[in-house]
Length: 107
Length: 372
Image 1 (cartoon, one colour):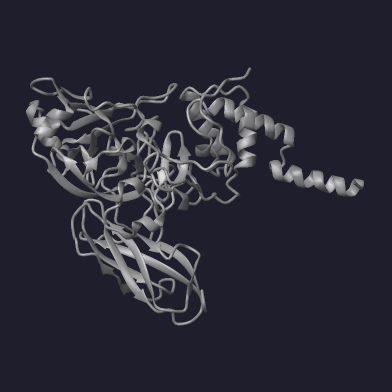
Image 2: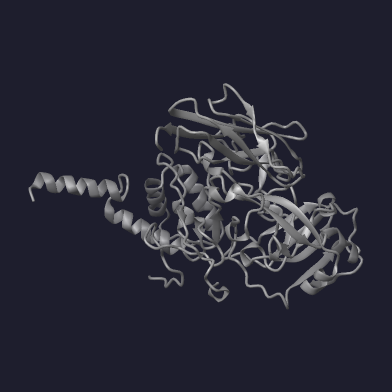
């Protein structure tokens, strides 16, 4: 692959992973999100929102008061603010499959 | 350090989620479940249980009908416990009422606000059956001069999340339509809807309809927990969009405001150049729906829609309007409801930091084309 094309591919990957966040930091941010948030709720609740940096900061404050253990707050805030900013459209929620045939024991 | 997680980590689009007991729902959160009803299920006056929306703040508790108890305490002449069998022995009433999440349609606020990004589907209409809350309070000798009844359910906070506890004014607790519901649309309450017993507070926001009820406390003061204050309050005076509200300038949300949705066609649908039926729903908290007007030209002209016949307080009405598009092209369709007290949906909803009570005139865009 020619160097010019390789750098273009890298640039596309870079933009696709997180806006302005390098892929490794984005991956670490994702891991921090999973570690800090999943004990209490699914990530959908977070990733369905599009908020400003200030609003994400307030959410982290609230969750810390509610017992979330956030080890690297700046990393998580950067990740959320860059991955789920209020400049992006709010995504449509995914639709579930038919669960009416699932027996009650599966609850 | 690696933490082992018991729940599966599902990335968007990787795996189809199914919710036991529910048909296809719009999944905002799968743990705990926050599920929105797709618009196509709003074509019947009763919303079936298997598509009724679900909002949970905390993980769903396991409840057992045989051992479940509701305790009555506080300003009562005798503290009591009621089993489900006890509740079944009391006179049973059925009330048709629309249940709407306080944050229904939150996703339409600009600037955006945190919280579940509900579209138009955090609402449904059902027939709820069970004893009156007032009958249960009477049996325990509840002091009707006390101002509040505080209600807790079997769900508990995780980590340091506050417990979900709500208080309601005595006047509403004594209202004949306020029930401790055991049934929803003639069936035992589904787990996700509060089995075996939930509060039904017709006309009031969904937050007060406590599920899995375990205790009732008669008191002179409301509960001081998070879910009474500061949550589920509206600024008494409008704040600038994007601003914050003064914590001392908030009111508890009670009755829901007049509102309508266009449910068919959906926003950005394409339809043919043939006669069409525009459909929707309208509701008005504790009032009745008096009128629904529809515009197909962005509000230049309005026509009265036809309303479904049952004209009750607390329950929604379906509306419809026959429309023959005059030509192909893009049309902006609006709906605007008026309630029996003369309140009309506003052009702009009142922005507030938590995104409650969105009730602006509804709007969808429709492209009319030949052969669509």
